[in-house]
Image (cartoon, rainbow, N blue to C red):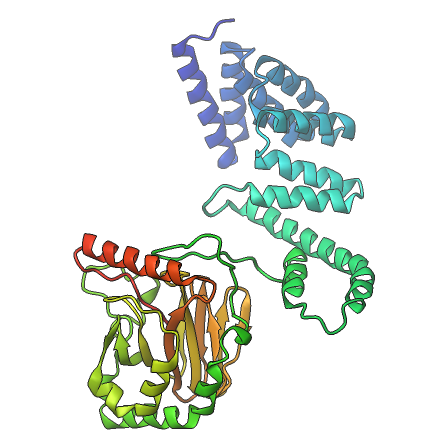
Length: 433
């Protein structure tokens, strides 16, 4: 029969009535509404689907299957109908027909996550853990954004468990061959390969650079840089005691010169910075701020000032460099965030590090060691923790990305300055830690 627009509206209303009745456990009312719909439109795919799924839920798979087969015959381009037919085949232990129905759904939409989920479950029942893991991974990758309903949350948890088990099996299989290959390269630096292997096995989350202002393509993406790229850091390490004394003297002399690092104006979105906005729990004593030297502060810290003059600072008028002492109060955390551009890196020289302090850049977490500087790319998500009982103090400044050429540095500086002029003097440069 031809379903008119008026009839379609009536069918929709009846299907909603069936759903409402089922939700409150009123089976008799649900059956009455469904009977009306079937009398009104016996060959409507949606009505056939509801009738078939109610029969399936009642344990009557033999009754459900022909109803669902008729539904997909009438509407072969709707993937949920094929998935529901697959469930009927599953109840009747017809795995070949079940897989065929799921394949039909995925032919319509290869990213249809219910079909991916049920195909993964089929492989798992068949004792094919590798194929099941592959399909569960596809299921997780194709989930829509947002908070999934409880039933899907359970499926997500199970999928992740299957993937963990598969990764453990994979690691056990790979280890002898990797160990043999590693032995052929004894003494070679294999840190990057180890990170690759850990990521492949699901032990290391994969992060990407997410600058808030400028991404310079085709530069190496490395969380913590190799110290060999910055041999001049040795001089900073050697001067740690002197620089620490300068920082402590500045803190003792006029604590008012240590200002909140996060200071967003009223009405601006604070996002993850709510707890630290305008708070001295994370305070800074600037020696250079957005390319402008604070001469009085530099005069109070002559050793730090002299060393800064010897470093390849990222120099962009009105923007960079920035150099400061960063004080993180006890029991304080700097939430995950990203920096503005990968054209410069951030240097940390730890001065005062109580127990319980750590730093994460991307997937790599490290503990500060007093007197041992490191360099990192802050366009990877990063966060700082001071779970200790004393303030943590780090000397921080920015330097050029060592992989940029002199010409590229000049052009980046000119581009950034031009952007500032266009935006009426608003500087995008900030860094944290």
